[in-house]
Image (cartoon, rainbow, N blue to C red; front, top):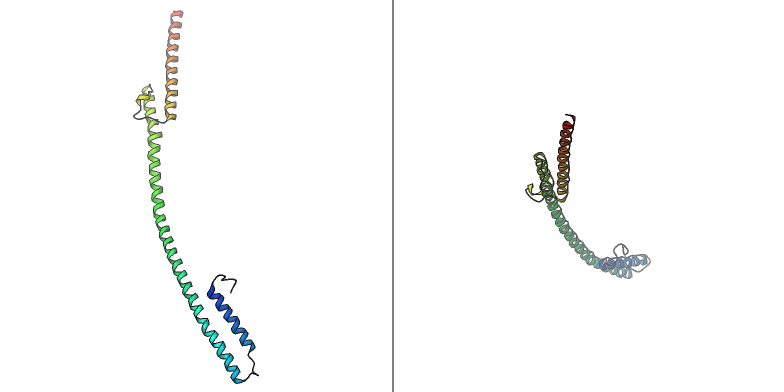
Length: 168
């Protein structure tokens, strides 16, 4: 008991008193006189009576610790129940914000880029707001590609006209 509850004075007192009572009980002898035997038994009873106080004190201390731990567990349960509701709500809010952000920064500029490409001229000023850098680079590349195609088309028409005149 002493090793298991080291540092607890009440258990140490009870353990020492029990050891003392055990020693006195072992020393009792039937050959002793009745008067001597009664005196030893009264001493043992007095020691046993004093055992009750430390045990009750220890019991109160343990009850206090149990109540304190129960209160702590109740607080943790409240916190846990709060997180059970808060975390999904935060996840939904975060997902909604990310969807709005991705729509505004990726999807919407690509839609505008597609619309401008169908019109034949891609211009930075044609965007309703400043697109991300990747979309701007894509717009510039597509604009250069469309310009190169228009130049190639015009060059092909010129060559076709020249060959028409040379054949005629």
